[in-house]
Length: 198
Image 1 (cartoon, helix red, strand yellow):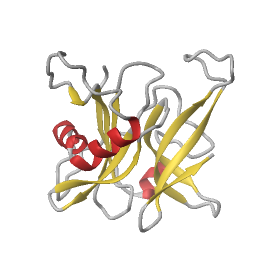
Image 2: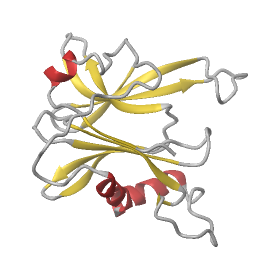
Image 3: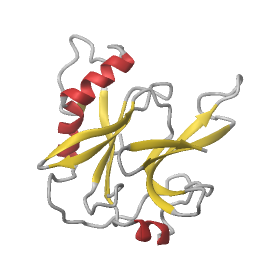
Image 4: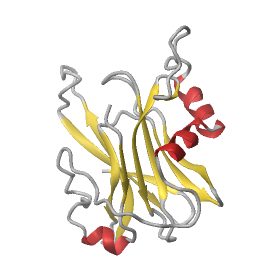
C-alpha cells in the first residue's frame, strides 16, 4: 500500500499562492499532491516513526475502538507485523503542515484498512514539547482523500485546512463510482479545530 509523507511549505500566504494546493470550490485533480519542502522545526519530528507512535498512543487507540468496535482488530492467530500500526490498520499517509499559523507543523495521519467499504479514520496531532498530542480526529469517515488545502471563508480570507473528499452515493451506485463528491474542510479557529462542509 502506498505511503507518502509530505512536508509542506508553511504560512497561509504561501498556501494561497501555491497552485499545487486547491482553493475551496476548485477541488484537487485526482492524484494531486501538496508541494514538498524540507522544514526544520523545534519539537517532535514529523515522520513515519512518529506517526506510528502517535496512532498507537492511548487517546487515539481508545477513541478508534470506541467508535468502530473491535471489528478491525487483528484476528487471533494472524502473525504480528510492523506494517499494522493498530488492529488491521496500516499507515497510509502522513502530512506535515502548519495549520494553526504558529510556525510549527501539525501532523496529519491517515491509517487505512481492508477494502473500499471500510471506514477511513484520520487525525491531526499537534506538537506539545517533544511529543505529539491528539488534537482532532474523524473516525467513522468515508473519504476518498485527505490532504492539506486552502479554505476560503465567507469574508474572502484564506486559511490553511485539511480537505476531505467525501463520496456521495445514490442507491444504485457501485462502491467504485459515486454519483458525486462533497468536500469538508477542517480549520483552526484560534482555539480548536472545527469542520466546515461544502
